[in-house]
Structure formats: C-alpha cells, structure tokens
Image (cartoon, rainbow, N blue to C red; front, side):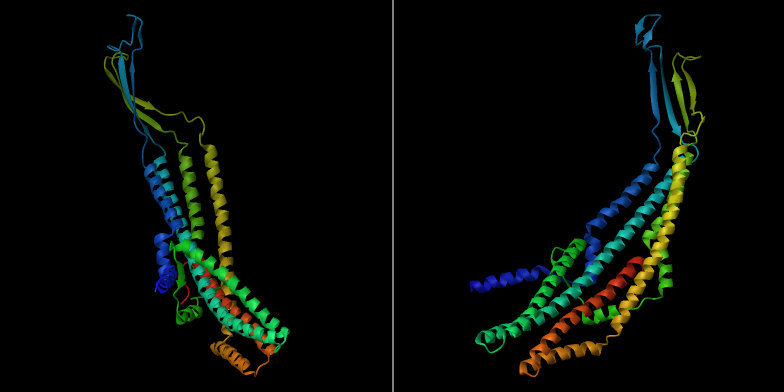
Length: 413
C-alpha cells in the first residue's frame, strides 16, 4: 500500500510540474509577469519625472547684510544701524522653459516607442518559442514511437542472433537505426528544454509549459494568408513599426533639443527687491534690483552646433532604417511564400498515405513479406521525412511571426 501511495505522489508531482497553456494564456502571463517589460515601464515613469522637473523654476534667493566692523565706534558686528536684505528671482528669457518642457515631452514619446518595440520583440520571442516547442514535442512523440518499435525489434534480433538464426549483419543494421533514432531523440529533447526555459523566462511561469494547440488550430494557422503583397506589407511596416517610428521621432526630438540649446544663448534676467537700513541715499530705502549677463558672445554656441549635427545624423539613420525595414519585410515575405508553396505541394492525402505506408511496412515486415533491407531503408527514409515535414510546418509559422514582428499589426487572416 505504501508503495502505491509513493508512486501516486511521484506521478502527481510530475504532473504538477507541467502546465498546459494555450498561446493566449502564455501571452497573458507574459504581459503580467515579464520582468524586462516591467523594468522598461519605469523609463516612461522617469520621462514623466523629467517633464515635471522641466516645469520647475529656480528657487528665489534671499540674501542679507549686516555691519562687520564700525570704524567710527570701533565696533565689530554693529548691526543695530547697518543691515539690509535682498530677494531675487531668475526670470527665464527666450522661451527656455517652454523649449525644455517640449524636449522632455518628446523624450517621453521616445520612451513609449522603445517600450512598444520591446513589447513586440518579446512577444515575438514568446510566440516563436511556443511554436518551436509545439513542433519539437510532435517530433519527440513521432521519434519515440519509432524508437519503441525498433528497440523491441532489435531485442528480438539479438536473441535470434545469439542462437545463430539471423546474421550479425542484420542485427548491426537495426542497431544503426536505433542509434540514429536515439541521437534524434537526444537532440530534440535538448531543444525542448531550451524552448521550455525561454518560455519560463518570458512568462514568469515556473512549471514546464505544455502547448495546448489542437490539430485544427495548427492547420488554420498554417493556412492563414497575409492581407497583401510585399509592397503593401512594406507600406504598413513603415506606418506601424515602432523601431522605425522611434528613428523618425528622434529627428523631431533632436530639433527640439537644438531649439532649446539655441534659446540658452539668450541672457536670463535676475529680478528682485532690496531693503537697506542706512547704507543708501535714504534711510530704510527699498530698491528694485535688475541683473542681466552681457551678451558679448554666444555662451552655448558649441552645444548648438552639436545639436544641429545630431539632427543631420538622425536623419541619415532614419533613411537607413527605412531601407533596412523595407528589405527585411521583402525578405521575410519571400521566405514565407517559398516555405508556404513548398508545403502546399504536399497534400493531406500524401501525409496520410505516408502513415499508411509506414503502418503497412511494419505489418508486412512482421509477416515476413518485406525483407530487412527494404524495411530498414524505408525506416531511415521515413525518419528523415517525418522530421523535415515538422520543420517545414514550423518554418512557415516562424516566417509569418517574423512578418508580424516587422509590420506590427494583424496581417494573417
């Protein structure tokens, strides 16, 4: 009884370590738990703080004076008849504050675009890893099925080989297929572990994720078509791609920065009032204080020139990003089209026939109607073809995801 209880606990803990999740479930967990996304959000909060800081003026300054030494009465700190006070406030001229605030608001828009691009990139990684895991699991299942039969067959041949009923050459031929299947299984399992790790990091889910995707859903995804050709996709990418929009916004941002730096050349005004007990023309006189730097030269000329060069640099970078984005969309579309057309040549009947032939070969070999050489040649060919078909299907989805990542809108229907 204790053994059965222990076995139940082991099985339960194994099942608990795996969690079936649809793609929508993974995306929801990703948006709620992804640490990179949560950290990037603080850049927007910091940009809000920069806007707040830009609106704050310099504090007014209060200064006072008292007598340090009275030479007539030879007194130190004779403050009774000699003291005064002043209050001054820096008044910004030339639209400095307005330009600083406009630059800070533009920087926040850049932070928002960076967040949007990170969201797109990480979600694309999530979807890519999800489908990678889905097809690797199918490959693992298919390989395991073949391996189970071939291991049983090899064990039987080893018994007969030891008795001298079959040749050692036949045993080695079967052994080579088993070794290859085991090698495939190890490689596939390694890929599965890598994709599971990626999904854990992206979603914050600590359990191994089991893709919950039906065959019909997978077929619908494979059959989806983009709304337009590569020219239309390029146009939509230029309108929606956050990375490209960031480079365009960077030009406006650098222009606002240049305008702000230019306004810093305008002298500011110090305005205030002062009271003097005895030091002025009159007793207890109140004076208006005005101070302004003499604009003998442009004190911020270097920064203005630097800002103007930044505008030109950002314009060139935006032009490059435009060409780069268009080229990437074109390449991604052609890759998707090529892989889609390649899989379309393989009809559903062909895939069904392949499984029928596989089952037929296994049954006929058991009945002795097929030679070992024919059987092993077919099994080797079937093994490679099965893996290639899964890779072809996954390749179509990965190409579509790359297009989605570039265009950044729903394009497959």
